[in-house]
Image (cartoon, rainbow, N blue to C red):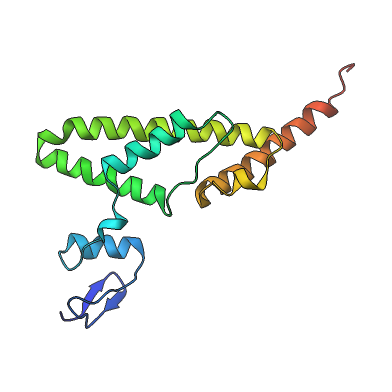
Length: 160
């Protein structure tokens, strides 16, 4: 393949069959253009989502949080976007898209509830190791918000 230009970024010459590591948005453009494809292990399936959802919502207690696969949220977004695209081309994907969207929303709500609970109580390093990078950022922000709120509430002068 000759040179490929995406915005101000120039690639090439690229060799067929060779692996390249690029930013996700660039990879997406290469896939859309037909120049590349994602590895199967980089793609999420309904079965993957269903297993993760079941483990998180059925197996784990309210204070336990399961570790997620690396890059879970980007893979989840890509999976849902791909399903939505397939649905626009073929109505037979409506059921899978509806079910996957419901499972994804339920999983995110479940983990969010657990993270908010973790932010309000003492926690252990083992639990925090199960959070993704995105979740850890949210957790740290929640801890700060909760701590600040508690501090303000407890310092309030009730007699005024």
